[in-house]
Length: 108
Length: 114
Image 1 (cartoon, rainbow over the protein chains, first blue to last red):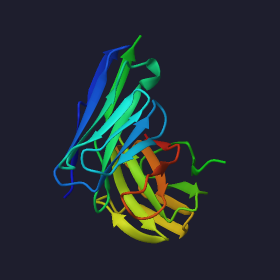
Image 2 (image 1 turned 30 degrees about the vertical axis):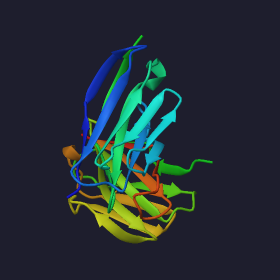
Image 3 (image 1 turned 45 degrees about the vertical axis):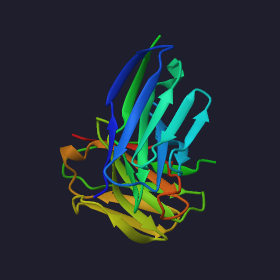
Image 4 (image 1 turned 90 degrees about the vertical axis):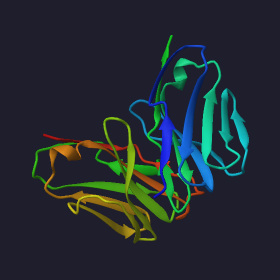
């Protein structure tokens, strides 16, 4: 069945450093979504990518969808303490399949 | 104004008990979901309902039984609770049963089985 692998599992960065999390799918995806879950909170939708090679930006966050629509990345430039949380990718096909998430800690 | 609400927020119970978690959405969505999130933050889908009809039933013990009285509500009943059932359970909804629609999550129910 459809699987979405996400790495790294954890990332500790110093405030101001960049951060990237990667997702890879075993199958071609129709779309990919990204969610953020703050500590103690619930997942909140960030963005969706649909087109091959698509790149979208939200302030310091850059989202990419691979040319083959099998991988995606989320890059945060100059992390801030407000960026802490778990970032999930979710690959779309017959159903939405969530990756395991990357837990981001930011040291100030 | 809460889009997706769950009750209770916390649930502490003993092994062997039966408990229910309720979920309601006021977004007018057709599809609702139950997810289980373990201590490692892994989000595992359990069930999905579209217009009160069960469409996804992942491999979960049959002690878990979802019920959707109408498309705005999806409840989860758990029989004979076990220690391994301790987790955070999230309800979610989306406009339709398609992966291209974003999902809105409820605040979660933290279940602790002692």
